[in-house]
Length: 447
Image 1: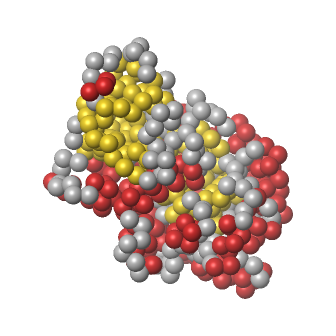
Image 2 (image 1 turned 135 degrees about the horizontal axis):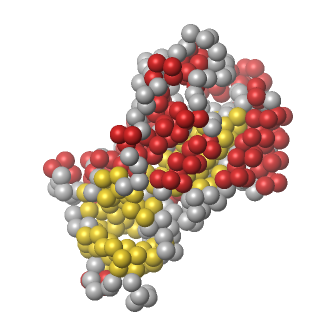
């Protein structure tokens, strides 16, 4: 360890660490040293007591966790929060969301993204994977506010070849942007809105340019049943025959993944991951949820997500962590499955892997990027602590995050946002935004 001044030293916290088997443990009274955006060392508070630093944080009573990753969202959709309530999926899309999205301007997307980033930073999210339109505006917000993001410009086959071309252009232009905090993906919407020819072309572009793919797939059981009835194959089988499963692919939702899909996912030629956002599935009354246990058994990482705030009403990954644990216990009928430590593993390393950042973030260890959050456990709702993992997953809330750090930069200190002015963001344009009298929609939901 160098004796020259560090950029940031955090002392007195308990730190979540992974051992060489990726088991989660906790080290008390720790000292964390950050230099040039990287975790230089994780040691004891005593070892760094006299070490000079540009900034020091006394984190007694707090736990340092790797920053949470929101593995699938549509950040600008916070502008639609609460607009399409208590509806089945088809009406939600066709009668409200897709007509309203046809009104969105680039300015709406920018304001929505800024509000979303503020919400995520305050909730301990240091990285998010987004899949939307007008993504140049989202990339600009990410650059400005200091968060990390994995971005893709969504497209449908109904847009013609230019939809796919625009997605590629975006991915190439922004890859490595925001001082390396932005990674990019090709973002075909879903197998029911993107035809086989476009999916095959996307797979070829992914290989040619070294890009991953982020796609909605087998979102619900109805999509799988409809695909089988119409085409004789599941959506996952469509991804296999079009070559998408031979790319590095992030599959959003997967609650319609069935037994016959598992060998294809296990034998996929690329890095395959699934993002689960359980709150939305409960809200839509979908009969199944992401088969986390079956995916675990075939070695497919499952990252945590919120989806957009139009369906989930929040971008709270902390809630996704707790709900994933609870829903998995319920659906498997096994209270021992998805323990608190397992849930923390999904929230940290597995989520980092899901968005292709498994070597850079997801754990607090030397050489990793300094993306971490400090969680205050001194409140009455988190005391006493008999099992620290259970306290974090089932008692703590996103509002207990005191400090959020990305790439060594403090984005929130003691609950105060330092890089986004929230009052300046709240949207003024609602009447025009929510108008549906024009009868247009960007797409039709018919699975």
